[in-house]
Amino acid sequence: EKRAGDLTGALDASLADASSHKKTLDESVHEMYSATHAKEALTKDFETLQSEFQTLSRSHHHELEQAESRKQSLRAAQTELGEATRTNDRLTGQLAQLKQSYENLTLAREKSESTFRTRCEE
Image (cartoon, rainbow, N blue to C red):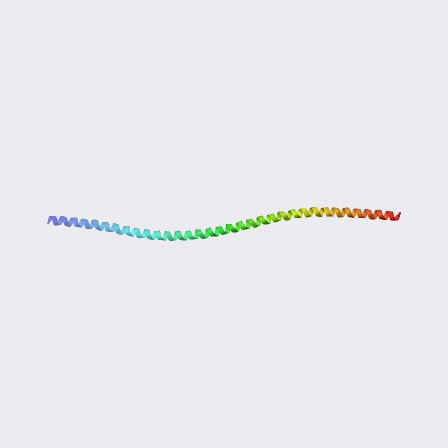
């Protein structure tokens, strides 16, 4: 009877120990489930952020291409403006020369007419 009591006590202790281990195992399974759920949520968030980043990256790349295109257009316009300015300066110089030639010709004509009149009167 003592041995049966000892065995019953040992069995009860083993059952209590097994129950404690089962409770710990249940808690671990619950923690693993929660961690798996959190990992899935984080993975989904990461994929969303990665997609947004790729969209922003493509948009930024497109904006950089547009900015580069505008920069090239501006350089071309600056080159054309420089050429137009040089042409304008050259034409302005030629116009000044033509005005001077016209004034010289006008003075020469007036002098010739004056000389002609003077000779005709003589």
